[in-house]
Amino acid sequence: MPQKKSALVGLSVPLALLLGCTDGSEATARDGAVIPGASDAAGTTVPTTVIGTVTSTTTSGTATFTINTAKILRPISPLIYGLNSTDEIATTKQTAVRSGGNRMTGHNWENNASNAGADWQFQNDNYLVSSLATNLQSVPGQAVRGLIEASHANGAAAILTIPNVDYVAADKSPAGDVRTSGANYLQTRFKKNVAKKGSAFSLTPDPTDDSVYQDEFVNWAKTTFTTGKLLFDLDNEPDLWSGTHPEIHPDKVTYAELVERNTRFASAIKDVSPEAKILGFVSYGWNGFVNLQDAPDKAKGDFINYYLKSMQAASTQAGRRLVDYLDVHWYPEATGGGDAAGTGGVRITGGAGANDVSAAVVEARVQAPRSLWDPTYTEASWITKWSTNGPIKLIPLLKEKIAANYPGTLLALTEWNYGGGKHISGAIASADVLGIYGREGVDLACNWGFGADEVFMRAAFRAYRNYDGAGGHFGDTAVEATTSDIAATSVYASVDSTALGKVVIVAINKRTSPVTASIAVAHTSSFGAADVFTLTAAGPAMTPAPGITATGANQFQYVLPGQSVSVLVPKP
Image 1: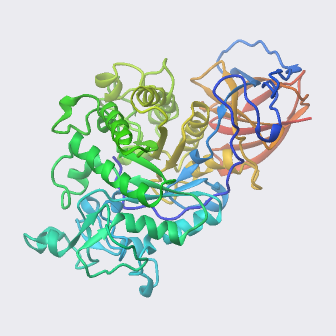
Image 2: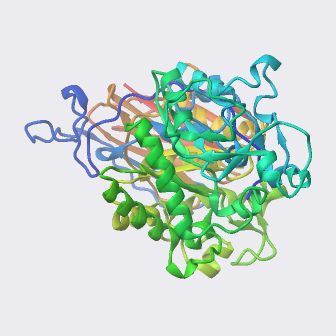
Image 3: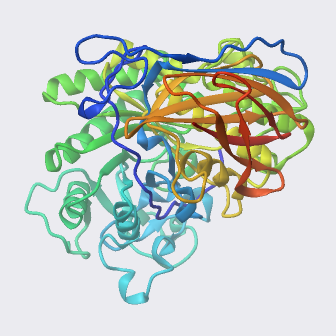
């Protein structure tokens, strides 16, 4: 679990509206336009008239990519390109921003105080608003106002964290461990955190009373910002509260307690904003998924199954859906240089491991995205050795749990990072992850940065959101794209409901040496060339590269530079 304090503002340029299609090979674009290979309104299949056919053996340094735009996989949610930061926002152009992190558990929206918990001396302070003018630091909502304004001004969704604990910070000083303030520190240094006020709301609540009301905060956000998308996280990593915030919640949270808290606060949010989308339970990672980090009542079984089933029951009783997204965090436990259990190895996201670029760790990092989906891949980690006893297949696993226990719930990963953010390996892993999210149907995702200098990680976003520096982006619909060598390469392809003839391909080379790819594109249009943009170890920028010409009917050969991310845009 990475150490962190808080996430501040971010912004975005939105993707096109999603297609109204279902999984499979048939889909109809909005406004009556038809994507090649799909069925039109009369049920007639639009023929794919140009299909490249390439036969190639896979040896070291070669691969075959097959793109078929007639095989539509699904619409790509525009909200998967999110960040918990605004660094390089003008070029990353993320589509969602989140105000999250450990700080937000003790956040008091009325005066912007927060408690740092175990991240920094358990002190109350003004960290969340320290960059603002002094006269603004105690104005209600200022800790998140900038995030909301910036995101909405740029068409992005804003995700706000709603504390679910019993207390939030009352003040911003004195510094140091609040627990040294006396046995009654919860009464003197904190305020009661209450889900529902039960009386009239105010946009400028009384800062001298003894309570902070979260439905009043939701009303403030909804009333103050009348345009743009607002979503709400049910606190942050409650499975770790007893470790990150023992000053507020010293005991391990239980299964029943967390369901009760999520139900109570979700109900309060929906009372004020019935249309709001709510994310829960915002877990930190694998052991939280399995048993809520060794909760006292873990004998009740798999926690995600318990949580989803319980929230389904609570929603049925309430007569409305209470939780819209299952929200989990994912910092891979994969290691390089050790044994199959990760013993003796270096974790790709752990401490110094996040910046480790030794050959073994780099290889583990660039392969680790396969644990999101690949039934043939087993990473070296304690998870695969002692818990799953084989491949993780995280996204299909979570979707199966949702389908079985709370159908219709969407899937969010509001924190994720694969390390190597200052190195090309971080760009490769991050670009692979973003492609997987689109192809596998993740509904919302926000990367958590380990530092402002993770320039290669953010460069991966540009491959999908701004590859040409002028807003060129991956399409809104995932189509079939396969590679003959998934260990060495990855490939993702899209079409776009706003430009039906446009195909965008993201091709990734995980190897240090070049790979020659034979590429076949099935599409109604005949492509004679392709523009190319590349990201390599030379620097964290998508750079225009010499274009390529077709070698046959929609067939290309392209040499992927060693350790690179390439964007190919076929054209007539």
